[in-house]
Amino acid sequence: MMFFGQVSASISHEIKNALAIINENAGLLEDLVLMSAKGVPPDIDRLGRLGETIRRQVRRADDIVKKMNQFAHSADHIAEKVDLYETTCFITDLCGRMIDMGRVSVNAIPPPEPVGIYTHRFYLQNILWVCIASIMKASCPDAQIKIHFETAARSAIMRFCVDPAPDSGFLENLFAGDAKVLGGYLQLQLVSGLPSGEIGIRLPARMQHQP
Image (cartoon, rainbow, N blue to C red; front, top):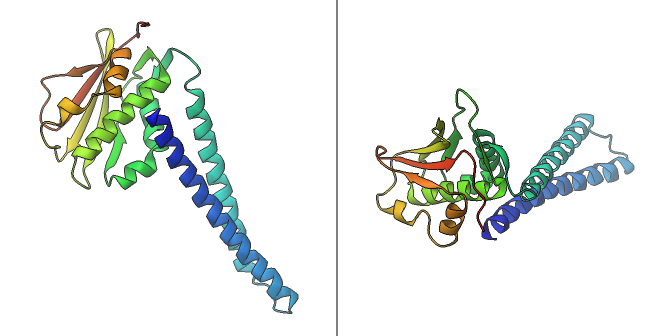
């Protein structure tokens, strides 16, 4: 699936960056050891900074791997109770590098009360990224995307508020091809009648299993 491949490639790039920094600092430590062997007094402060940099990058890589593991296991269950706000925060964090490359900011606004639905977590994450990536593509650089969450009758609504508003006409192409099939499986509906610059999706409180 393209979504899994995109996320995996982005995560592997972040891990490689962390490893490259660790490798660079390990090389510097080796240089200091060689200089010390030749009688040059070791720079204790520099050694401390190098050690802290390596520890920081190890923690960074460990955090990335934990997120990747959590992402991979999200496909284990057909349907489960999912908190929309927490899931959106997870996806924006997981896809942070791709969002940065899109030169936009994405902020999930915490709702007053938890907004939960019973659905397929992995496919929900996929459709959330479809929405974010599509809006990013249609928006100008430095656009701000704020995501709001609401509980409705037997459903939940997510509103993507974009400033400045993206070009009109992209909404028709938001769910096409595989995304259309995915949206149908999740029983997603677009919310009509929203102000300019807002895109809304409605998800059922409990997804009905489909063949």
